[in-house]
View (cartoon, rainbow, N blue to C red):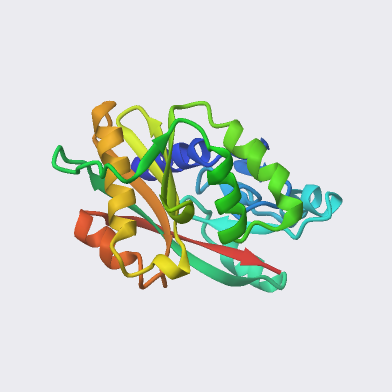
Length: 243
């Protein structure tokens, strides 16, 4: 369980919320509705309170902001909370895996993969166009990325000015968090996901990282074989619940 706590802490910092606070063993995260990870209720310990009064008080701040409450249930979630949420009308919408991989010196940087310390205008434009960023979420997304306090790398591949692939890496001591690997539909099945991710592993290795972690939807049949071949193994799973 200590490993889960540690990786949850890393993931919270690696993909930050714009605002968060802790209540009765739970962490409430807010980012203007941009991504479930940064707008969800997360248990910090299996002893977190689950009585009806606290459950309602955890939902209330989201409702006041006009957001649908989202619960993210990791192995730190208290026993019985899933049944409580089911009785309150919640259902599971997505199961995801947190995977960890030991980095290696033979992960090589591809010279065609640009690595930038912050998102360039072209990176932002491509991300907004090809990822599910709604117009109302563009400002929260920009502020979230700007709030990352650890060294970060924004990988970007272009071909004749046309965006092909991109991803984000966040350096956190001996760990590197990998986020938002995106290959454009017209560029898929060409090995770009491997080239982009391994360029980021090489960047992180050179800066002292020895492990990488990522969060991937359990049904992502395109990404999972690549991550397995790179050495990623699932440490734990989590799921989201919405009413």
